[in-house]
Length: 50
Image (spheres, rainbow, N blue to C red):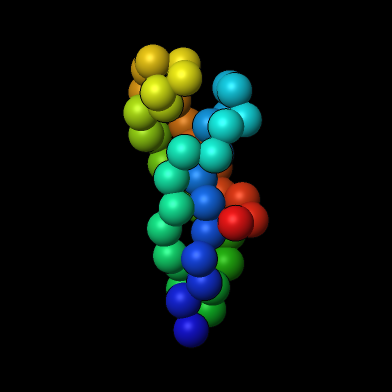
């Protein structure tokens, strides 16, 4: 039921995190503010394919 997704930085486009998401209850793309080690700051990370 839960699908594996990756979170990519919106500034440098680097895939930094992976997590799971229930696609039945959350139909929109996930966007979280996480730390990017390449940018060395907290940036928005958006859902992408693994």
